[in-house]
Image 1 (cartoon, rainbow, N blue to C red):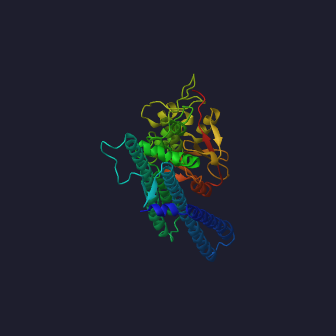
Image 2: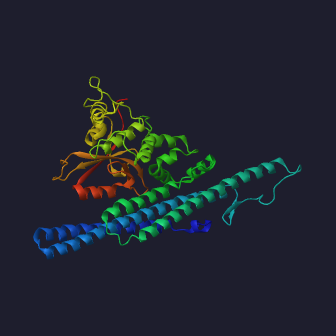
Image 3: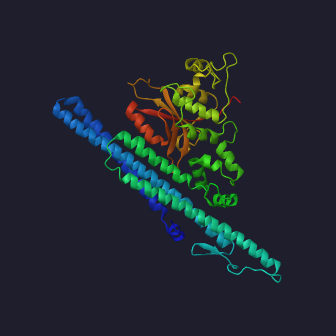
Length: 433
């Protein structure tokens, strides 16, 4: 349990520096891995085909795998430390706000609790002046608010400390993992989830709305913005925030409710799609279903309905997959390139990674030749469901199914498996209604 004095004196910047150092180590490990494969393993395969060359190539491949796995584990450590730094920063700011409120209202902090003039001497009886009784009541209200903020700050710090400690211990035990699939799809994914859970736990869910208002007003504008991008769903469900926060989270134009879009993606990432398009289309089918859950309206061609070239949406079908896919779902519904181009034609805007926020759509466009996907073709789509305070974009997707995984890490795997990819982030802003 983190104490008042622990939190008050902690050096948040040191955790942030440690996170940055681990990011640098992960990059170096990944770079060394790529060098070994490109300048060691490949030349051996090309020019030394006998048993000795194969043995040497196998050793180099094993070393490259270990470096790649180690890089992913280091990224996991950095994610946890980054979340720890920001969580402690939120908690420390809340504690500072409590102290500021105490000073403004003539209170003092003793042993981590707010005390006032009337502490231990309740003014009662018929001879006590009304102004004294009123002052006592006001003071008790201030004491209650300050102590509630202190408790909230310590809760946030303690949960972050506990979760980070447990996950770092677990990561330390993976040091000998050489299976790149395990490191990337299990270890790094779990660390990403822990990072998100730590940030989510910084939000005072289920607390009194007055406390929520005091907590929110005590955060810096940047901290407020960071939390709105990290977990819009939990914030939108919180009772006590200013109305403009909810409007900003959901979308000020009222055309797509970005919160409900993200909620759908987070709730359905591991659920079977309503209609199975197979590996080629379930990713975009999932994205379209998320847009539909957010309230994006159908666009029908006046002559051909959903079968037109400039349509989006779906209608109830027959239960026969082939017919439903072709007659009751638009071409843009489950084809990544079709959805991308449709959104960009109808009000959507491509945004930079630094501007990405939950409710945006990530598209993968093939750049490298020599694969089944032609260069220039967009072949995958996913929903942005979180952006962490350090700017890490989290995706939720189908084919393969993942929830809140790092775009940087998924892009790395896509580049390795399919050659160079171009990442395009599109913000849907419908112009047909």
